[in-house]
Length: 222
Ligand code: DX5
Ligand code: ZN
Image 1 (cartoon, protein in one colour):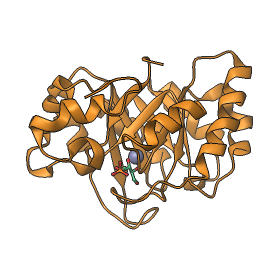
Image 2: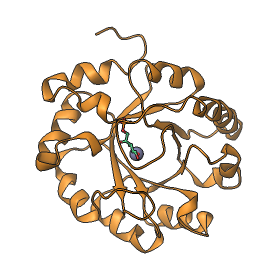
Image 3: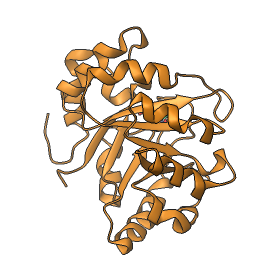
């Protein structure tokens, strides 16, 4: 299970020096950079958009794992591609044509992902599973870092693990919200292959990032 990807969420980084923060988590062993885009409408919080992502792009070669919590999505797809997003993940509730949106993301040269809120069933992915490279299980209601892990989402992870295995495709199964050294191993046992963590990575400042990331990987003692 050493192949689990760690994708630190910069929502918990110091926004006044995001470039430094990204270089620090890259050096500390992050596999991807999780970037939470919020519009104050789809979720009750605001963050940043393509211009900030474009400025961050030169600071690391690691994939940008961009989680869109915005509605609508479609008009912004070209801007996220131009800004340097590698994976672009959308919530089905953000628009009426999920399949079309996923196709548009692929056509723009990015890898499409679909994110499921805690109240959204796994079955919703089934009709579009051939169109996604990543499935994101939200283990908190999206909008804020530092919330408590919702246990029932582990059952959804198990269902999605079986669904993905049946495709024979290498779809990333990622979990986001309330992940720490206690919840991450349980999510990995349930079948995830990628862990998003904000507060658990950025807690303690730059000198702690390496140990914080290692603490999320199974079988690694820090
Ligand atoms: C919440 C975001 C998460 C958030 C996770 O809407 O999607 O990525 O940053 O934060 P923690 O790891 O602190 O729960
Ligand atoms: Zn996220």
